[in-house]
Amino acid sequence: MPEDQEVHRGLEGVIVAETKIGFVDGQNGRLVYRGYDIETLVNNSTYEETSYLLINGNLPDRAKLSGYLAELKTRRKVPGKVLDFIDDYAGTSHPMSDLRSALSVLGSMDKDTVMPNLEKQKSMGIDVIARTPVLVAAIKRKWEGKKIVEPSEDLGFSANFLYMSNGSKPTKEQEKVMDTCLILHADHGSNASTFSSLVTISTLSDIYSAVTSGIATLKGPLHGGANELALETIKKVGSPDNAEKVIGDMLARKEKVMGFGHRVYKVYDPRARILKEFARSITKKSGKDNLFATAEAMEKAMINKVGGKGVFPNVDFYSGMVYESLGFQDNIFTPIFAVSRASGWIARSLEYLADNRLFRPKAKYTGETGPREYIPLDKR
Ligand code: ACO
Image (tube, rainbow, N blue to C red):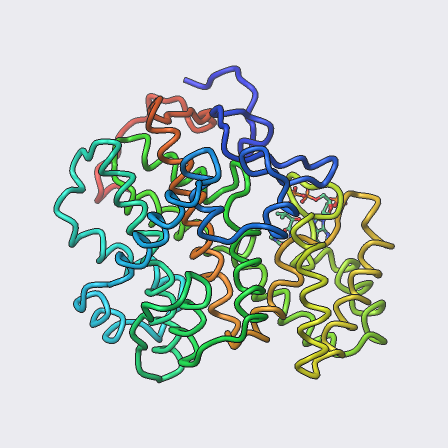
């Protein structure tokens, strides 16, 4: 029977859980992980340390950090069968489909995925954090028709990811840029993919399944897929002189400009502010100043026209050109997001599991109330 209840489309404004992990202050443009402002972490921390913080609640001391770093390094090894799977199946659909399936294959090789206890879930989580970049690098290489590169024992998380992706050791500056991108994307409130992970884990499923759900949800263009489309749009605009007109035309056609707007931030996204400066310097060095100048002109036009509605650049607007400068083709941008967000999905899944409640919302029934007469097939 229809229920006389208000429908919260897209669950907007509905609070579904308590968390101590991260806070998005959409009115003041602040992003906080476990009490630390994102700028503080970008300036002082590393992705590994940030990942530890998200999962465990506090920054590690020296001994705990070196233990975590060692664990992440030893768990980098991905079974050959998973790499064979990538070699056989990746390269035709989309790298996010490849990643979703490859992680699923990895999960199906773990014998402890039936009703794992919290400790086992956490251990699986660290496996996933360590191995997701290995999968993404292998998928990237496959898409480029190149041989998969073995992980390097000597390199940290971000440097190894770049090394396996590009086949050469990154500079210190490239490593820092990659690390910053990973810190910036590691957690972001109850977004669609994180919620998806929580729904999955709330059934007492396993971490591989929760992260696979997150990846599947992140794939869409209204979420993680926007940075690929944002860079495409910037390239189509082509020059700062075209920005005003193209943006005006797009808005007149009621088109969404990718890389702008956010469900929570109604001011400038703090991640975009940080990425913009990296984009400025990295494009200058790679001789792509025009790309940056075009993006900046688009930003100006958008803020003039729709800033009043709370529409500003989001994290996806400048990240594409940063990734491109680091050697990634556009269809790998969202998989990079997944490499980073794995920490957030896992931290929040573990937190939720510790006080689990199965998700089971309702939908308001607006269909026929019946009872309808059943008409046999040959009489319809
Ligand atoms: N381009 C043009 N206009 C926009 C944009 C945009 N990117 N975003 C919002 N607006 C306009 C809307 O048309 C609407 O105008 P109206 O009031 O005249 O109808 C107004 O701003 C409010 O927008 P909503 O759609 O209500 O904003 P909502 O919070 O629902 O949407 C969303 C957020 C889905 C992210 C939207 O801004 C969008 O589609 N952006 C483009 C895709 C994108 O960049 N996604 C990445 C988000 S960040 C992330 O997931 C990592």
